[in-house]
Length: 248
Image 1 (cartoon, rainbow, N blue to C red):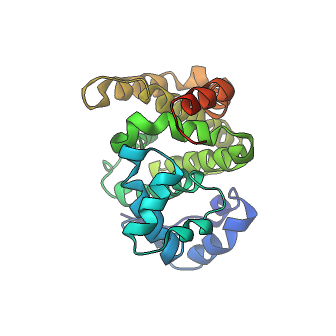
Image 2: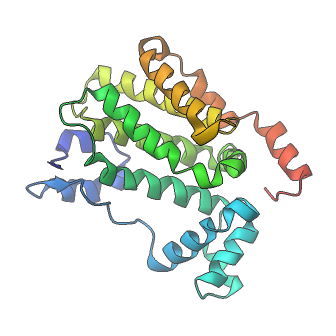
């Protein structure tokens, strides 16, 4: 699947991301058969990739980050490269999985409608959380802390952008902004639902996402779910995790 990202679509991104995207638009096409280059340097990529492997056991913590540094062949002090601490692992997962969606887009059904494609892409993204689903509330707690909320919201917006674009929605109109907000709310709700889903293969999360997409018209304008995703009753959740020995 070869497609060109139109220049007007690039303008929806934050200013600091536009230069690289405008460069992509200067080519005759932009292929979504391959993942975009990682925004992390080789050292960051090596440590954070290794740290993710320790999340199922140690959670989104500085302990996982330290183990990641050791596994990647670096001294423990190398974790100082990440001033946001454990949040850097969360952000790495969010960014790299968003970029990986482009590769999955090549397997979408030809001529399928946008909603069907969005569902496929969103499910693929949610499934990337499976290995750490039992730890994802820790990630949400970190995302909901005051210092990280701007990054959390920006990444959610970028994910919504990418889901819509890869699904085939490339025209930026007033309706696009409504769809973008609604999709952010739907995905946020599905991610929250998944943290409590005990069904086999997270089948109930898949059903939840499908229902919300089918009810998309009702969701538009109901941005409270985004607030819930960011807030996550931050104080109570953070305190609860701290009481269990999780450093946040």
